[in-house]
Image (cartoon, rainbow, N blue to C red; front, side, top):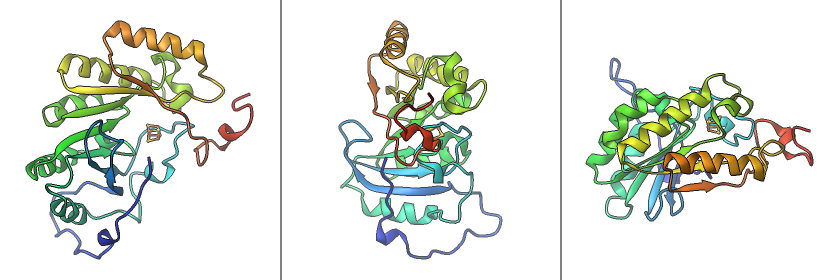
Length: 230
Ligand code: SF4
């Protein structure tokens, strides 16, 4: 995912008033995309922070919960107000958007502006995803591997169970969603992908997309080597 900051988003805005509720921490914004929400013109809001550390992650700057380069939510709001009637949807991506308790409030604001709501998520917080379901029009859920294989990708024990619990929620919820898998270089070959596809199909997943792993600027630079993980 490319990240850009529109020039008109770089103007200074007043800091939040003392005692005001915390705002969504936004680490980047793509003003226009045709590929992040199927069939819709969308903007992408990149939320700051992620609890996992996938070796192939190319959004390293979005992983810490805080950053000196945040875009104030007031600027995002102003930008979206200027795009009413021009964009169909806003996708909350990351990082991991559901990390932030303020996500629901931000989504409600965006929905009130007339945009559809998309979410890109790793499924790291199934209970939070469940609470957000009534606000969502479409979800892109990363399923990185079979549950037992997750720690080798994310570095976090139990991460696979969380992601697959989120998948179960989406299958039950009736929200439109796509499962996306990025094969790990040196680990996931055709045989592993075939097993994963079979498991997903058996659960009822109809929209599964395999994405090429971009090995430039990954958290683990060894993935760019000829025999990664070898
Ligand atoms: S879930 Fe993994 S790939 Fe996604 S932002 Fe977090 S560390 Fe990066």
